[in-house]
Length: 193
Image 1 (cartoon, rainbow, N blue to C red):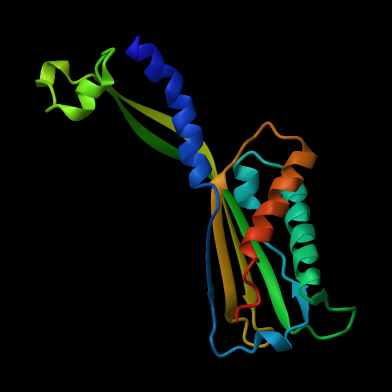
Image 2 (tube, rainbow, N blue to C red):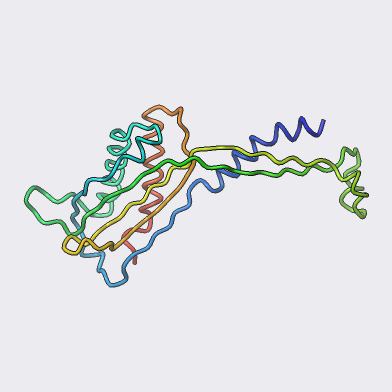
């Protein structure tokens, strides 16, 4: 009974673990830059080989990322620099997919109808402590790094990084919606104050 319950709980626990860690965002920026003066930007071509190596349509994902960034930055008062006009900053992204392993250990209390005995009395001898199960799950982790550069020195002035599990059987609309969420989280605190 416990092994069946542990087997049923394992995928749920994995989903919860990945869901809790689904949207880690890290940002860093140059304190000396006046971000309020930055209103126009230009894209720099990004290397798409890591996405293609991960088995994804690199061109489509690149377009979705750029579109989501353009929308988020437009909402913050930034626009793509017009033809022949200088940009206040350059922007590029790097996206990759990497195979990772999640190790989960699940411990179940012994089969007892009276849980009060388990929680309020000293623990039973080791032979009666219940069962434990350790399982490994492989999953694809997608990493997105967005970098903004000074147009003259090409020195980074802002960088954001996020990682989350990649679900491969999504439609383009679902993938676009997920990329929109990721970019919104990544740019939530841009421009820095």
